[in-house]
Length: 296
Image (cartoon, rainbow, N blue to C red):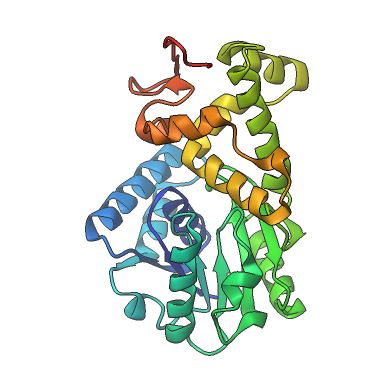
């Protein structure tokens, strides 16, 4: 595999493009919004500059990585030579199904179709294609250039040769792949999201405050950050969407999103991306949100 197409230039998409380009792959970064593509290249450049300043890569390596990335607003042009296409669009099932149908229509024969989804069924995405054996999940972690894990998800029909290829590709990126089967939430979010949801319930019921909950998990359980801070980083809307996938998939009320989470998302408090969630992020760092009735 030499030619990688990435659909979606947001946080995950530009991070995935960065990592592949840094490791010598030719990357086509695709987004219908030209301004979003410009922003993505700016973000990738800043992140590469950070790596140079930390002496993780050289200036020449940075320039080579940037030269490996081309941007496209037309999917047809962007996937015409692809060996692998990675969809990294918003975590919305209907949108991803439309993108996969279009990817399948335009992709070269033999091209592998992957999704960076964190919860949506790979088997369902594969069902709208004529190549279900070549559809697989590649769930990168945020921030992609830093985090080692890639959760690889087999759909019901994914061919073993495709799985083996993607496992090796992940290792070529200096990542550590973990193989999962296609059940709601896979491994990562089936474990993580109920914990985050329970932390929100703990706040909602007044058992503890935001800082107290995060402090217990950081100092008592050796987590690098507390579940409420992590939820802010993931995006509270994304947490809600994943919990709803789990709830729908298993039919168990323990997966239903806490009413506090639902209310916060409706109020536009989505975490870092909106500037406020369980913490205030508008001043370049986290500040505890103190608002009357916040935990009720």
